[in-house]
Image 1 (tube, rainbow, N blue to C red):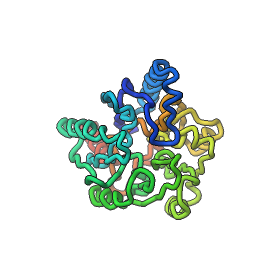
Image 2: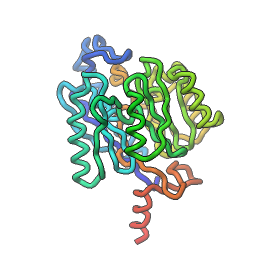
Image 3: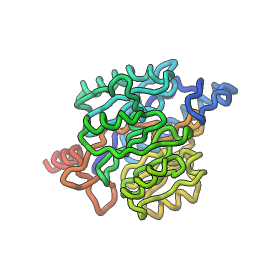
Image 4: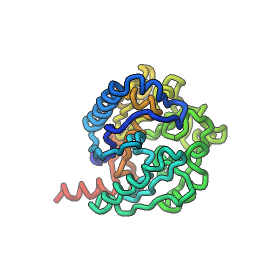
Length: 312
C-alpha cells in the first residue's frame, strides 16, 4: 500500500471489566479469575497489534491509566481527519476521566508534528469519537451514529469543524451503542452492517446512499461476535474471530480477512475497531480515494508527499 495507516492502541495493563455501561459487560465473569483474564487480554492485544503490523499498518502503543479500564478502546477518544482532531465528550461518568489523558496525548502528537489541530467537543455535547463517526473514503463523508452515546447536536459540530458532510444514522438498540459495533465501511465501497441496530429511516439512508449492490448485511452471529467492529485498510480486514460464512462473503469481494481472538475485550463490549484509532485518515485529493485495490491509487496528502520524496 502506498499509504501506510497509522493506528493508536492503548496498553492493556490496566484493563478490567469492573462496571456495566453496556449490555455486553460482564464484570462477574472477569472477576471470577481476574489474573487469568488480564493475561488473556494482554495476549489478545499483542495479537491484534501483530496482525495490524503484518497487514501493513504502523501501530503507536500509548499507556493507559489505573481506574480507566476502557481506555483500551481509543476509537472512542476522538474523531480524526486531515491531521485535525475533535476530542470526545463521554456520556458515561465512568469514562470521563479518559478525556484529559487523551487530550494530553493528542497535544503531544501535535507538538511532535503528527497532528495540526486538537479541539474538544463543547461541554455538554456528548460525542464518543470515531466509534460514532466513521469516515467513508468512497463517498467522502462521515456516517455518524446518535441516539445512544452521542448526541444529535454533535453532528453539526463535526460538520463545521471538518467542513465535510455528515450523514446521521439513529441507533435504536442499547446492545449496539456505538456505530462501529454494527457498521463497517470497506475500502472498495461496500458496507457491512447489522440492520436491527438502526431505525427504519437509518436503514433507508444507508441503502439509498450506499446502493443495494454495496450492502452486506451482518447476521446475528456476526454482530454478536463483534465481527462488524473490524479494521479495514486496502484489501486487509482484521476482526474478532469471524464465522466461515462471513469470511467467504468478504473474500468474494477481494478482501483478506484475519481473525484474532479478542474474547477478553468482548467481555467489555469492544472489538478490533474499538481498540484502534487511525491517526492519519485523510480526505481524497483530486477526486481519487485510497482503496488498496490495484485499479486505484492512494492519493491522500501524505501518500502524495511520500511519492514525491521517493521520486527525488
